[in-house]
Each structure stands twice: as structure tokens, then as C-alpha cells.
Image (cartoon, rainbow, N blue to C red):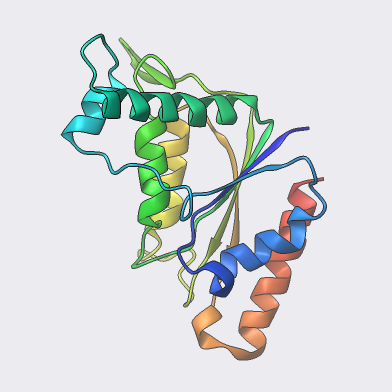
Length: 192
């Protein structure tokens, strides 16, 4: 089983989502780890959007963006399991993860339009999202992470998605420690 781990926290060693992942990575020696805060993805703008459409008139910079997108998509297609860290920043996913999703969402490559609506082209993968938060938000109208990721991942065909929540980290004490320990155990179980 091949595993792709996408880390998206900007907090490095202080990241709660990275701490959860690091406790499990040792058990996945073959996993490909991509840290989106270190190996940054271009922000979607007009030039990047045009690059993702391909064609013969791309600048060198645009061709590099297209090549990078192809590399990211190939990694995703090769993996059997994808683990995504998605800490909640201001009630949403990190910009780094949004940039990644923007650059891999390509018509005719990861999804296609049909008469009945879009169809995702990346299928048969298990996705595990580890989402950490400072407060307690799961199930509330403040949790935009879960709905957005279900929609976006489903759009490209990834519909087998499990969420692992680790909350209350800014609240400290036993509650934060318990949430962390539960998330680590849940991730270990999900990867079995």
C-alpha cells in the first residue's frame, strides 16, 4: 500500500497536526511526504490558470507550473491512501492546502464536465483528513474545513474520506492532551 502524506501547517515544530502525523510516520516507512509549507505551490492567478490549461504558447514560468501540477497529480494517482493535515486557520484550511487543491483541479485531467455535472477522475483511494483546531468547532457552523474538503475532494473523485478531529489545543490542559492522543490512535486505526 502506498501512502501520500500532505502536510499543510505553517507552524513547523509547533504544529499540532504535524505532531499527530509525526507519531504515525515511523510506521509508514514507504510513505511519500510533501510539506506544502516548505515545498510551496503557486497561488492561482491569471498566469497560473492559463498555465493549467496547457497549450503551445506557455511561457517558461507557465510550463514550470504545468509540470509541477503534473507531478502533484501523478503523486496523487500513485497513492492508495492519502493523509491530509488540515489545521483550521480562521475557520478554513491553510492557504497552502488551498493552493495545492487549486493546482490539481484540472478539467480533463482530474475531473471532467458531463451533461449531468462534473465527474471526478481520481478514484479508488482512501483519504484521511487530520484536522486540528485551537477551539471546539466540529459540527458547528464555524467548521468550514469539513464541508469544503468533502466538496473539493469529491469534485476530483475522492469520495472515501474520513475525518479525524483534534480540537481544543488552545484551551490546553487535559482536554488538549486527550484530543491529541485520540487523534493519534484514530489515525493509526484508519491506516490499518
